[in-house]
Image 1 (cartoon, rainbow, N blue to C red):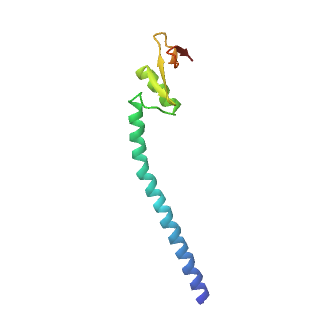
Image 2: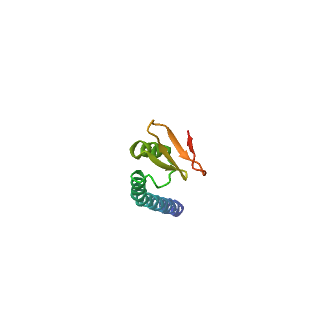
Image 3: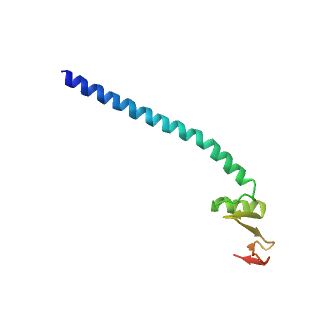
Length: 94
């Protein structure tokens, strides 16, 4: 009888420990998300911030006619062609 109670106590202790760890992970995730959303909004409205997000890059090209993607600034010409400037200042069309 005491063995059964001891096993039951250990199982309940394990479940309580597991539940508390899981609850802490969920709480941490909710704290990170608003900061990330604010950062994405800042990137969306500022084409001079470099991004690795291809969809955001295309959106900024449509909206502002320029966008930084992976450290390189791309522009949209009057003919709707995408280009960037080389180190020599020449237009390189994509």
